[in-house]
Image 1 (cartoon, rainbow, N blue to C red):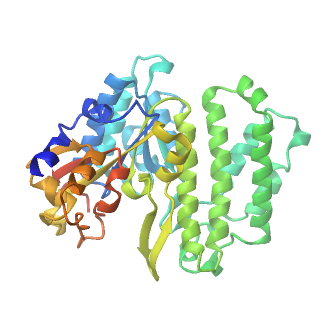
Image 2 (image 1 turned 180 degrees about the vertical axis):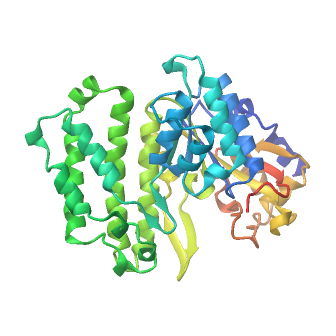
Image 3 (image 1 turned 90 degrees about the horizontal axis):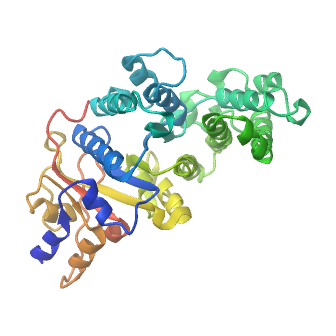
Amino acid sequence: MARDIKDTAHPMDSSAIVGLLPARPRLLALGEPTHGAETLLGLRNELFQELVEREGYRTIALETDCLRGMLVDDYVTGEGDSGLDLDEVMERGFSHEWGAFPGNRELVRWVRAYNEGRPAPDRLRFAGFDGPLEITGAASPRPVLNALHEYLSARVDAHLLPCTAEVLDRLVGADDRWTDPDAMMDPSRSVGQSAEARELRLLADDLVALLEAHAPHLVATSSPDDWDRARLYGRTATGLLRYHFWMAEPSPGRMTWLLGVRDSMMADNLLALAERGPVLVNAQNGHLQRHKSTMSMWDHPRLEWWGAGALVSARLGREYAFLATALGTIRHQGVDVPPSDTVEGLLYELGKDRCVVDAPGLAAALGAGRADTPSARESSWFGYSPLDPEHLADNDALVFVRDVQPGQIPG
């Protein structure tokens, strides 16, 4: 059995990963079980560089605000006229304070350096694929509604627009009505089901319908980036207004809806990115896995919803590939050597600092000749989510990192 398990592990590089897949996927999703571990960010950066050089990948997408990500993309491609330096880009171009992670900074620096002197078609691209959402709530819809309206106003007959910019501004009102952090815990504080918000949902829907109905003209008269961003504004506007609607909903399904809307927004963004070429995606395992995501939150003991990976996989089939990442130890956070009856424990005993594992092959090896399946590992630290052994075979491959050293997860 030990030999069978060892035979499923390979050196960690892009060639080994691609060799485990039936074909090069349009979306190669690299999950992580904890956020901000510099060991994992460094591994991700190395993998992206190899995929660029060996497999023709040209975009990397991270679990960060899709709107802020446009600023990072402008910086690394040399487009736009922001005049920002790297420090400002890292501060303003990432949500969740992830611009502070050295691994993310190094990624942005490397991509910009790679792009210098290259023609536009050969440049690497950066994208955030999360909505403009934080754990405390969601952004005002004003910026995306205004941007979409401005784009359409410049390109279609005025009488086709469902409203004026002034009407949008009046209906949105003060931005702090939308961003009240107390609304996450108290639905009555949300404006998402007000008369104005309901009207905005209808207008946003009409603006997106107008965008789609005039696609032939708009594609022909816009740059590819302008067209892509107009579509992003439309997706984000409708998604944000739907999210705000459910923030105001007091029913028991509220949190499940909020989690589902967020991942639906992620999935739509990933599908749009996949249209322009192969993409490496990096996010928490739970967002990218094929099986249902689960979470306990506040007074909800178990929430279940379909994550972005499951939604994208249903659409792309084999053109979506998922690599879950599992860890051995994070000792400085109290995550010690994994029990030997867990998947992490069995891989830890191989003694490899890092490797890529044939997940379906490992699942088959663990199922052959064993009276019981591996146990699920439990974590004493909320910031780490262990692997779910019941769904091991749902992963195309498994990245295993034996130890995360102290100081590699910013506090």
